[in-house]
Image (cartoon, rainbow, N blue to C red; front, top):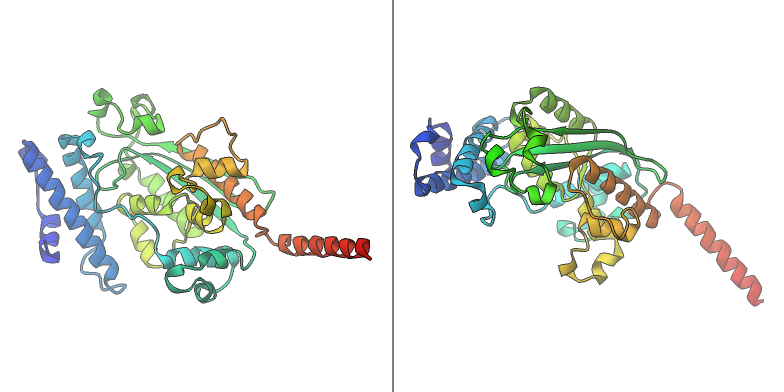
Length: 343
C-alpha cells in the first residue's frame, strides 16, 4: 500500500455490516492498520502547516477499525502485534523531558546525552530537578490503540521536591460497546475492571468535556508516565488535538521507566528477565510499595505509586535542589573528621 492508496482507503465509505466472514474482517483490519501507520508517518514527516491532510483522518480511520476488531474478536488479536504502538519515546523526546525538569536549554542536555541519547543517564544527574508534573496512567482493552478502547484514566500532580505529595488526583471510567456486557471486558485479568464499572459511561472518544480538559492539562504541565510511549500512542489516536499539540511542541513527555533504567544502578545488576524497570519491582526496591503488595493496574493508584517512586529515586541520587551540596558538605566533614582522628 502506498500513501495515495492509504488516503483513498481512509476516505472510503465502508459499512462494517457487509463484512460478514472472518477472512474479510481480518483483511479489512489489516488494511486499515497499515493505512493508519502510513498516514501517521506522512503527517509527522511533513513540515508544520504543509501536512497533506488533517490528523483527524487518521483518528477517524482508527475509530472505524475498532468495531471491525470487535466483530472479529479481540481475544483472537491479543497475540498479534499491531503497527501503531510505539515501543519507546524518541531520543529527542527524552532529552526534552530532562531539559524541562532541569530548567536548562535542550541543546545543553543533548550535548551531554550524545548520539541517540546514549549518555542521557549522565544528563539526568547533571543538574537538579524542579517543577510540577502531571502523572498520568490509562487502562485499556487492548495493547494497540487502533484496536481497543480507553476505559480508565488517572492523573495527579506533584511538585518535584523531596517532601511533596501527589495532589488533585482525578479518576474516570469510560464506556465500551454493549457486546462486552456478555463477553466480559477485555484484559480484565490485568486491570480487574468489569462491566459494572463501565455500564452507562460515555466512551472516551465521545466525551468532549474530558478531552478538552485533558488537552489543556497536557499543554500546561509535562505528562509523566511509566513507559510513556504507551500513553503517547493511545493519546495520538484517541485524544482530539493531541497529535497536533505534540507536533507543535506544546506537550512535554517524561518517561519514568526511562528514569529507572538510566539512573537506578540496581537495573544493571538484576537479570533482565526479572523486569527490574517494571513499576512494581522498582517501587519495592525504593520502599514505596511493600514487599507483599502488588501494583494495582488502575490509573490513579499507579499514578500515585509512580510519582512517589520517582521522588524516592531522585532523593536517592541527590537530584533535588540543595541535596547535592548537602551531601558534599557531609562528605567533606566526614573526611575532615577522619583526617583529625588519624593525626
